[in-house]
Image (cartoon, rainbow, N blue to C red):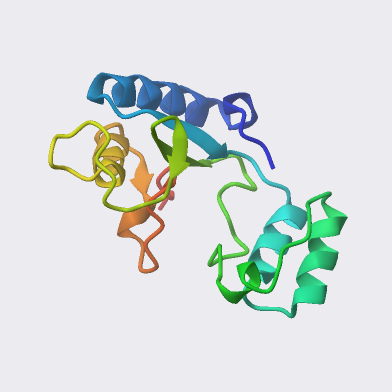
Length: 149
């Protein structure tokens, strides 16, 4: 699984850089946690919370990932096998609070009374991207190119 902007398709590379600049202007530190993924990586992620622990860890081993424990296998981390990450058309972020990634939905590092993930979503949408916080199964760290048609 990549975290490199260069692994995104060219138009998404440009959007990711624009997004990064606007996040800096808004005073919201963040890091990319995922850009491109392989089908095998997505399969391993999709299995989590759906398959038994032995199968999940077998799939994780295929892609070189460490095994997880029962607790981590008690919840789902992705909702699709048709991830836009496979095509390099999506990226995930983590807001940084005191230099550490946080996925707390109400985190407000820049102290402007707007939760930072919601503000990141507004920034993404302002440059023509789709924010995962509006999905049926909200995925606030996820940002992708709009679907065609």
